[in-house]
Image (tube, rainbow, N blue to C red; front, top):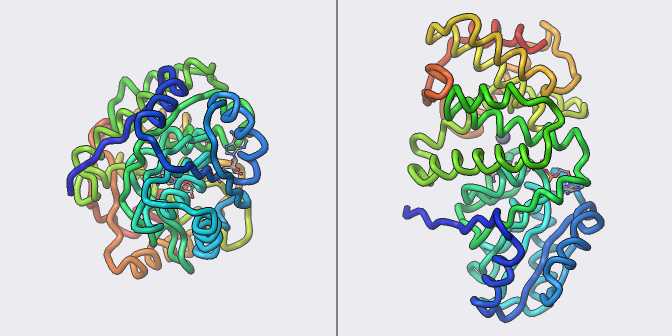
Length: 348
Ligand SMILES: NC(=O)c1ccc[n+]([C@@H]2O[C@H](COP(=O)([O-])OP(=O)(O)OC[C@H]3O[C@@H](n4cnc5c(N)ncnc54)[C@H](O)[C@@H]3O)[C@@H](O)[C@H]2O)c1
Ligand SMILES: [Zn+2]
């Protein structure tokens, strides 16, 4: 499948967005936001795009609404308001809004143009990049969706001013992940910064993160090869995330992935014979990002069982995306169960 690039507006983003919309001459514009971005981000968007007329659709906030029922609501709103093939959809929000809005836009009347205006760090650095849209279907997370690139992505870190600190850390974990996949000096740079980051630092490293993900995706849009490296930290991360979520305990994706990065770095260090210091520095750096929930030894088998379940659901084996060394991803790795269990000891 050919990769179609999105324009990513990071410098003078609003001017560029205005020019893009004027040049394309859309018949109508539909903006999707959630309850929080409607309150915190829509007023700023209107201030920056004063001449733009658009219909607003607002959905509730949170992962739980990323489902078919919400799609039906969105599609109904758009169809009743007269959406046509020459309309534009703008998604103003975090990864939930871009995932579901991108999916609804790619499927309504066989697809209309879509632009993402990400407002969370997770969406800026990760979710809006790479063209994966989707929703959760029954127990299958993100398993109904499309590969559709948005026409443009508008990055303005001003939105992060209202993003809660916990959500900021959540998104930063994916930036750290990109640094570990990309190169040791990039990771080193991040460890030299102190939290919370200055706005200029955030912008610099987010741009670097976007470049890293974009480069990988240009090589392998449909995830048959190198794109799998972006799953580093996610095999164990997802298992930890669903373990806690099924107990109704509050864990964010990035917090679970931070723990997953620690465990999968440990596995990598054993399989590929890292120097002990390399693993220790990753472990120390990741700890403040992994949230506060504890995992006891008695929980380990259930967490491993979650990986098995995931394997069955996806009808394939559990393969890890590990690091031969920081900056050198190694995908499709099988890991013995006893090593997975041992790695969970490093969760705490
Ligand atoms: N498509 C992909 O490649 C990809 C990659 C990573 C994550 N994702 C998806 O992204 C989602 C997670 O993204 P997320 O962390 O942005 O979640 P989210 O969209 O739920 O946003 C997190 C919370 O922050 C609020 N929020 C967003 N921007 C705000 C702002 N500027 N001020 C105040 N509040 C704000 C939201 O309303 C929400 O309550 C998941 O569904 C995940 O599956 C997709
Ligand atoms: Zn992730």
